Image (tube, rainbow, N blue to C red; front, side, top):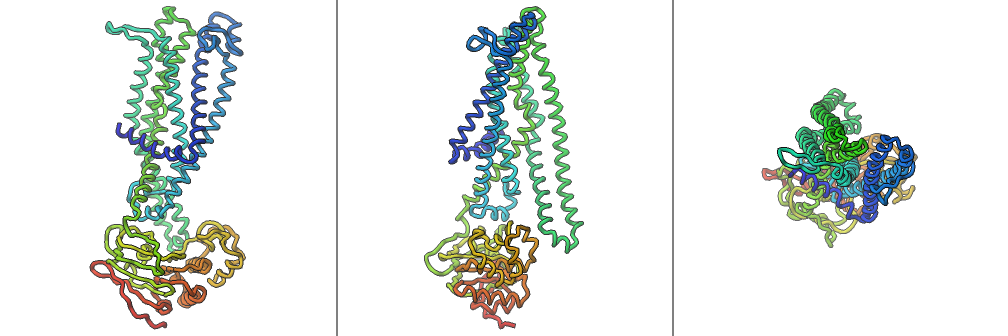
Length: 589
């Protein structure tokens, strides 16, 4: 019961935001329309059952007039609504119109709900850099493969929620409707001196309850197996994408054998998991098939004594069989859909853990290193204590002030925490304490590995501004200053620029962005390290020439670059962590 309660809470957690959103009126309208259509189809099935019994009786009595009336138009009868039994063909035509339009509107609700939930979780994933925080804490439940959660799990959740949800409600209505028919057509029996009314009703329920319990017992492991399967599939796909994105590095290292082993290990895990699913599916399929076959003969066996005693007609027997089948099928809905439910349950669990992980990250905002937009003109670090995710200290409680218009360089041994300090100043590092106070104005951070977005070169240069934020002349000038003027004719070419450009060219492209953006504060984390020494020094001189009012903080090591700054800071390791000291500027070589 606790699993069922958690499952239902997860469904409510995932679906409720949409039905409370700005689209709630259209969402509820579509939902009610589809429900009304499904309930109308149940009512038509009741009438078909009534029509079928009367039709068989007409056949048995060689009554051709009634036979064709029941086929094409209607027949007066006290048993039918409004004193008639509608004909089979009119019922089928009406059912077709309702069914087609009901399915169309369900698909309309499906795509609207998926669109809204995708935007909702995409925005939550991007908000406050949760996408980055998840990479820092990959071991946390719900943080793995967020791309799959958004692109696949939401689609699977919405489709299955509507199909299974409407199916369940329709089966409940069908159960109640045909239960009334079966009750009226049923008969009492005496067992050990006890009179049991509506015998067929109890048989149908008993058979369904036993089948549901056995299906749950046999198929329960499928939920966890499918959960693991989705994770393994996503991990394998991620490894393939990672190989494609790093194709040059793998090729230069001739690392195909090692990469092949990595891919093979991940795919072997998929195969092993799938074999476990196959074994469990075999048991579930064997049970559900046997269960369905036996269900077809039970009503005939139960009602046959009355028929052979000529106490009921063949038409009544067919109505009993049809009503029993509908009751049994509706009550056995879980058995019939167990494998689909197992797949969906794993999807619901994955998506819910993803959503709650995002909620937890949102709740943790402000509990680590505080980010403040100050009213002054300086960039200040106050009592900053910097840590790694494993709580190891990188920087002891440190204070630092950067005055506007100054140029500062930070150096130190690799692995000492310079880039982590850079991330803390950018507001994306959550581990530690203290305050980073930014002044008002435009701030830009350039990491060592430049990011190249998808799309045209024009988009890559303008990023993160809008593609039309700068004129053609400005973009061409910035590319020329950054040493990429030869790319100007390809500004509107859409290709994988991250693979086309070398590491040094990507860094030059990032510097072209800075020249276009003209930030008040520019932070560079070895953002020119892939360039040759002369090219690196030339670009720093260009930055000072083109951006004379910009405050500059660089992480760099080469003496020629360090010498172009006014202040030299060194991050030094200590037994307790690390400290920042002021050092004299080295002489340029």
